Length: 242
Ligand SMILES: Nc1ncnc2c1ncn2[C@@H]1O[C@H](COP(=O)(O)OP(=O)(O)OP(=O)(O)O)[C@@H](O)[C@H]1O
Image (cartoon, rainbow, N blue to C red):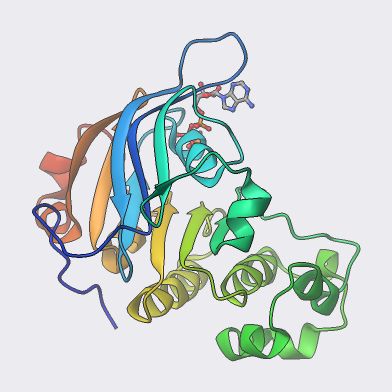
């Protein structure tokens, strides 16, 4: 199971699941955090968004998802301009796994899946490891198991696009690979994925394309293959390789 050859440029037929043109976003009265971003997310591909701390990766995900209204530019969902808030985009098939994972610690795993309107059977197909924990409070699970709940809940709603923020943060490499492998398999089934990742090497093994953000703008973009072949040249200027 590895990334498929998805071109990083050039014409493709059909419509991206999610796209942005000239997207700028920020907070309060401060200047924009991301500026003039253009990006597209196509069915079946994993795009990883990399960049140093504070580059604007989380802000990009929030603005694309409707959790943060852009200051300017347009976001399209299935080719149609959207300004809908996150909960409406979620109903239309967009899944956001935010940095805080939004797992409710006082609820059981089963309850967490249900409030996310997830298909519990499908969630267990994705992560059989959760079956024996279904009736445990999520707060008693390990960090990795909590991340599995968050990801299982997102995927078990059969979304068209997944935006995930640092899924593997704080996890051992083996667990990070497990989660990223699940994301890759979902993309192989047609899901469009945008991943913000700290584990750059792991992210590159599952990604088709890479976008590097710096100071809120795209500093580099290209195929994951090119990034893997010359990570020092392409990424070293922007990121410590972890
Ligand atoms: N809620 C907020 N209110 C005000 N400023 C914010 C808020 N969230 C983020 N910022 C600022 O926006 C900038 C970009 O933050 P963002 O979280 O998008 O970056 P990031 O690339 O995801 O970084 P990290 O890897 O540290 O999570 C930072 O300067 C941050 O301080």
